[in-house]
Length: 103
Image 1 (cartoon, rainbow, N blue to C red):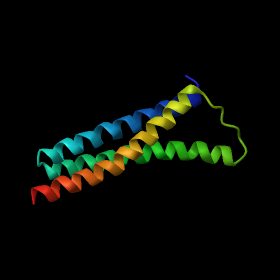
Image 2 (cartoon, one colour):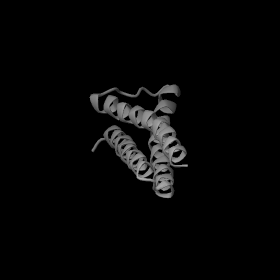
Image 3 (tube, rainbow, N blue to C red):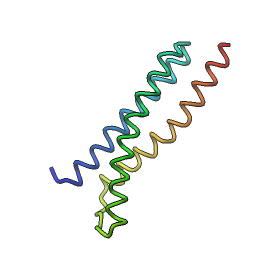
Image 4 (cartoon, rainbow, N blue to C red):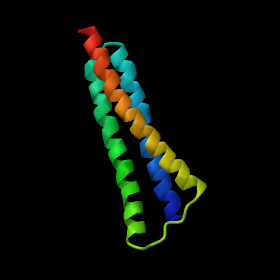
């Protein structure tokens, strides 16, 4: 597998895992399992951070003058990362709302 494909799949894998964990956190909070929801948020944060680090390295490569070739796979990876980022912000808010509603 080409290096760029490996980088893209790394972003996709970690962003997808983060997104799944974030959705699990929302479900746990809805069920009143706030401790478990918090654990899922923390675990998701780790995956999101790894995906973001890989993406940041690509940006640094481009800034340093090394051309990064665009492909449908890279666009998909960036889409997955941005989707996970959006869900991350919403999940944190929803977990807080469910906790407040329970109290």
